[in-house]
Image (cartoon, rainbow, N blue to C red; front, side):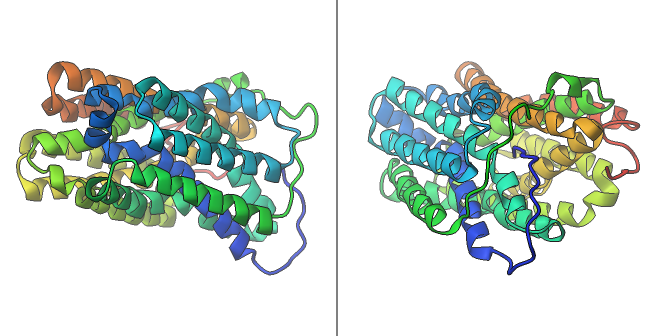
Length: 398
């Protein structure tokens, strides 16, 4: 989800699919490492000897690691070669997932998850730009689509498989599998990706100035609230289903969510140029309906699966919608606006783990859907109000 704005002319040559698939796999590692604890939360909690709300903070601390370090580390490593930096980030994932799998200490696990978040901040700061710089300008959209495919694949396939492995074998098995995959990606990147230079001296984007661009603040506010709501539900979906008597169905519920997310991504990609406003409002409405269904019918298996379907359809294209909206609103300051979105996105993920843990510990799982619904109401209000700037009725492409 991060941005790199270097553009180096690339001569026409065969589409570098193997190299882009290496980037897609790196994206997969990043996305799945972030969300993996959600599917194995009850068993991970038992192994660490802490409550489920405390274990949920492993997602929180990951997001804190990304939010707190993405901008300063990206600036500090701006002059590094992109290949060297990506290899460093993937090695960080291997170390962090190994420690997470082996640890029975809660503080050590939190430290490992923070390290994984730092690695994610480095990775997101260069993956999109790396993909664009591998191809000529007229192929950059296609290259981005291939590289970013790792996110929906992680949601639709990785999380359910990780949850299944955690249930059938042991909670730490999917983390160890991520270590093996990260090491494989290190070799793949080393063998196939060409080196790309870092940013020249003095190339830092004026981040704060983006806030003065009309529409940026509403989009960022929607981002914080929407991501906060989604993270609360996603992080604690396993204990929620367990209390509803569907604990053994977490992997299949997440599979429905993931497949619906793929459909949502495809639909948004097909219509975003003309209907960004309608798609954003529609996505928030679908997730709001999801929360209401889970709040009213948590013990009904058909309603739970229907909720998972609507959740995926509503959420799947949301990252694309919000990134596009903030880029449009930012105009000439789009780069800085994107950097702020990435940081606030991860801060909201950290907040989602924290708020969800508090709700779970004090009010129980039944309060989670209503908390999500309460957060989505201002999302809808902000998106509806930002008709002129932020989420305009007709999109003017920058």
